[in-house]
Length: 343
Length: 119
Ligand SMILES: Cc1cc2nc3c(=O)[nH]c(=O)nc-3n(C[C@H](O)[C@H](O)[C@H](O)COP(=O)(O)OP(=O)(O)OC[C@H]3O[C@@H](n4cnc5c(N)ncnc54)[C@H](O)[C@@H]3O)c2cc1C
Ligand code: SF4
Ligand code: SF4
Ligand code: SF4
Image 1: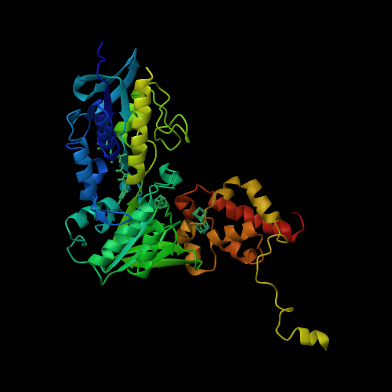
Image 2: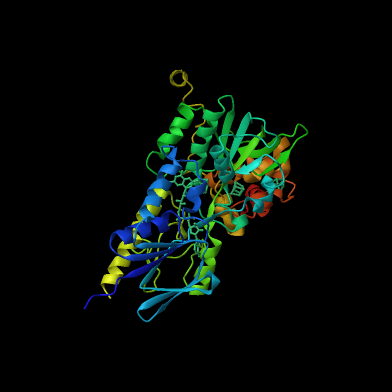
């Protein structure tokens, strides 16, 4: 008797979801990749050049697009996975618009949301013209123009680390991991685009956890003259010259410091995504104190949900860079295949 | 005479610059931690100091004070601590949720007690 071909639903078409879909398809498994947005790609669609090597983000996007261009993969866009439940030997997914999809397993890859910078009102995002987020700056890089709201080039730019991360005031005690190295990368890019400019990073700790990150930090000082000041910025205001003024303590000098800036970049952190949260709530999936999906085991089961047939991939479980997201996603595929074979 | 010779480079007369953690006075730290347990959460970001009006004009630095208390370096604090107006601005900033204002109040209390030999 010929066995029915296995079918897996992948919820979320970012880096994690695309890599999972591609790996599964390669093994002869039928995949339905469900993406809420217009196109698969997730946050990677917004980035210009990637740390640590500053390669164009387009190279990785191209790899992923190729990965999902496979006859075993059916991509459904503009559709949200709202609920998943285990039923007999199947997993049933409720999709937006009242549709249902049945499969043998589901990989949840719902990713993250950027922290909404409006919530740190003291930094003036949405209030002052020249306060932008790291994501807004990527957009400027994509358009090849870093400028103030009036179109003029900024002569002093400040990067504010840990916006919406490591901050009890916004209910996020976790570190978002990638924003320190993103600041270093963006600081270098700004210095290259605007060689006359001065660039300062305001950090609490420099978390250069990945390969070549510390080297990039070093390069930023040695080659690009990026300045680092250790202290948490408490607030920003605007003076009569329409320049931003920030207040911080230079904790290494042990004294309060004021500085005028032309452009202030908020390094926004990662939070559990809203559609991911709704999916978790509707499906009874556990979330941790950081509100990301809680895996069955932090060391050897980080892809396991604890529910048979439901697996996790990527930043829906914790902040990660692309490298770790892809590794985590491949591991989720391995767990899924093992589960399918063992039934 | 021989003592003078030995002191020619000043080694014996200068007080050590090092923080000697083993001989430092931990009473103030213990008192503050007990009365205001959130004191332990400070990760020295300086947000409080940046926000503090007093610190812009006079030598008072809450982040540094926290560090000094932890190291048992309390000599400088007696005067500084009286400069805080207990306005609570620092409280609004602290990303670790330290009850900063109460840390100052309890520290002032601890130093008073220390001077009266009540700690
Ligand atoms: C400012 C910034 C810069 C960065 N730069 C780099 C870099 O240079 N190099 C690097 O290695 N990493 C970088 N990263 C990290 C990188 O963006 C992430 O590692 C990667 O995007 C994670 O992919 P993901 O698939 O887990 O999540 P996401 O990219 O968030 O994708 C999740 C997808 O799932 C969809 N979705 C969510 N819920 C549902 C649902 N219920 N149903 C259907 N679809 C759903 C979303 O629409 C989204 O498309 C950066 C991150 C930030 C914040
Ligand atoms: S990676 Fe750096 S900027 Fe981001 S939350 Fe962690 S310490 Fe803050
Ligand atoms: S309570 Fe004291 S330390 Fe805090 S901001 Fe006011 S004066 Fe400064
Ligand atoms: S703001 Fe809070 S965590 Fe930061 S130095 Fe002050 S007390 Fe410590």
